[in-house]
Image (cartoon, rainbow, N blue to C red):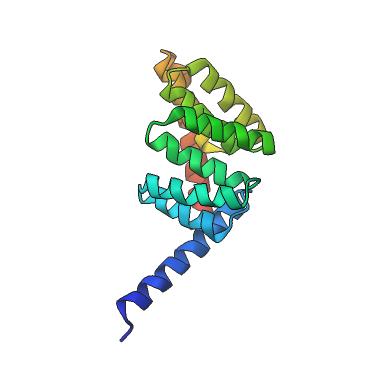
Length: 170
């Protein structure tokens, strides 16, 4: 019978491979460190993920994925200024990375800067019209700024994209 430790190692290795594939397939080159950080974020261990990404950035300061992931973790704990800084660093490294724009949009929403959030989402959508998260965040910004009809349109578009995206894996 397989030991619990051995089973756990196999599980986390398989999870890392899947997450690495997802990050790379979405245009974000990922190292095993980034995959672990993405898993920590998924499990809501944000401070642990941030610590892991800090080490990753120190050793590889030009890896965009590390800044985007850390911005996501900062957004999750309400540290919007730090998220914005990471997004802007990622944008300097590659201004055509739509996920940096969507993560900054989310931070702007957290700071009640809805007009700027909408602008960032617009830019992300121009770069990747199939990025459901950009429509979701733009819908949230429109809703919070009182434009509910526009928000509903964006929400429906995000839903369509997610359903289409999910059907690819069936």
